[in-house]
Length: 318
Image 1 (cartoon, rainbow, N blue to C red):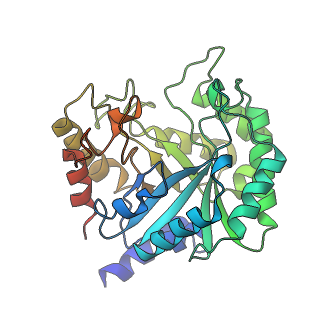
Image 2 (cartoon, rainbow, N blue to C red):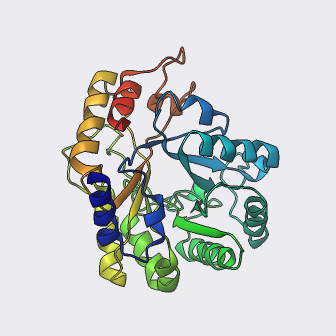
Image 3 (spheres, rainbow, N blue to C red):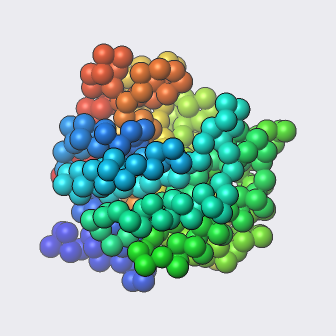
């Protein structure tokens, strides 16, 4: 009875026609962000009941055997993939995707068996930072790429759910960055029809500044940053969107793991989980052994579970 009631609430909040409804995961919003497809087996120790898993794919990673095995294991272990598209890094910045690149990604995924009707894809990463978008911040250029991706995937026989690139809510206006507000204003004002076609929003709800804020913070750089993003979208388009928090986490060089695990629990139980607009929370990062990513790793330098690992596992259990 509780399960049916939960589904009814999801339908009411997201709308009967929302494509996200099919991704309701028995009320479990938790997942994790990984860097390598092979980690899909290991994360079952973190999330034994399954959940969401965010994973990037680069243009040099288009190995059908590797990715089919990932989808097979994700299905076997109860994980819902969220795949973030990435191009190639030239040593200074990530290359901007070409139309050919987007078609290449589309052809690659459409030839694989996802074991589900729809695949969630993220259109690249934090383009309000120049190094993430060809060395220059350009909302118009990003909007054109996002529009082409959305429209192209609509022509595919398989169904995709497209999320935009998450933005850095802590960025300031400079020669190499643009504030979230300004970037969104320019993107939405030029591409309202594209925004209308999105399956949901994508947010990096980090506890800024410095990845070390409090879970009780309410400013636009806090774990509530996604709320400010959704308000901007609502004001400019009138559209209510669900949101996927595909990155979040505290810097363990600035806070103890005990404190971080307590902060995460508070953020999840008091902010993210009670918010019906939040579909998934995939903290960054499952495993990293070198800086700067090791400051967010759920495994320590001996690849043993941290206190945060244990806390997330506890929160994910029915």
